[in-house]
Length: 458
Ligand SMILES: Nc1ncnc2c1ncn2[C@@H]1O[C@H](COP(=O)(O)OP(=O)(O)OP(=O)(O)O)[C@@H](O)[C@H]1O
Ligand SMILES: [Mg+2]
Image (spheres, rainbow, N blue to C red):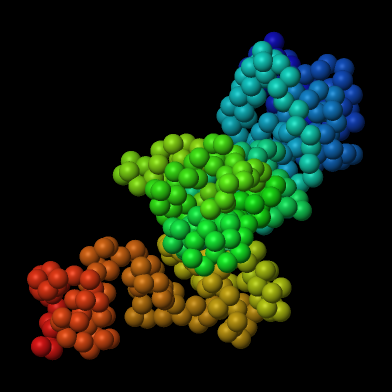
């Protein structure tokens, strides 16, 4: 029979859990203080501890540490009324098995207990597998509540204990880079975080950007230059927009990740890779694998741990928290004193679908704060979201890949816009425009007809 120790200063929680769990066939003991909990722990050496973070005498994290010192394999499920990411990550990082919020959902708790006991069972079979040394937790500012964000915090806590490759997927502006940085700062202090945008540079340049080059490796390589992998040392290399990497370079990257070694472009020396790799994409990478645009072997290499960040419209409950957090940040940065947004505005925020996610919210708040006259941001401060004849969901955008509602354009729409623009802006004749567009005259004519574009000149 598995033995469970419940440490919680709330007597009714202790009693309820005791009653319920005994009925489920566990041997249950309870303690109302940290000290009593520790004493009982030594006395009965339970398989599992359910531990409240807030205790009257000793901090729950302290107890967790002591428990782990007594028995490094003990499974601890932490419980707290707090809904913040810092304690979640910290709990997971310091070796808690799981983390549950009050009010306790008994089904959730039971699932966690079963999982923990199963893990313990397996570990006992394998023996001596665990026991990472504790590191201090560094707070990062990722705002989020709800089960999906909570899972993300847990994952951050777990991956911060090691150096596994992480793939972060999420729409634009969901906080991919932010999460990468938090993982970095929780894992390696005093080492560089180096971000490389894989879409911003042409292939050959990207290769030398990543791996460096020797003097004379190509025209323009006037001196030896170390690549980002070298510069990242024992820190983190963040490969942003990894989906945009050419297949050719994907093959090279794969080799580097497999061998943990590479050569500078035009060089012979083998250089070791010590950096942790975090890749990010706003596309569905698996979909690209299926389309043959992304190597499946590289996908599996990168996808050791995946973090899928939900778009803001799927976690609207975070909007008030984010507004609050972002306004504090803005007040600090811009020396403002904005207290909040009006109820009416908050309602509009809830209705809006946030194609640009948290970044869009942040941008709107910054702009509104800069121009605001009062301390509460109201509808007049967000003309983009509220002013007629704009329909709900409309947002000002200079992003040429999207329409005025933030929706991505189809290829045909982009083509049509592009053709119209060149005709209007260049004022050139058909032959010259065909040259600019790189298409033949008949193709051009077909497109004019398809899009109903009237060409007035020649
Ligand atoms: N959960 C969050 N809590 C607090 N701030 C956030 C959160 N998510 C994103 N942000 C903020 O929103 C902005 C955009 O985040 P970030 O640059 O990490 O997004 P991204 O996913 O990398 O976007 P893109 O795909 O456009 O590069 C940053 O200023 C970041 O600090
Ligand atoms: Mg980014």
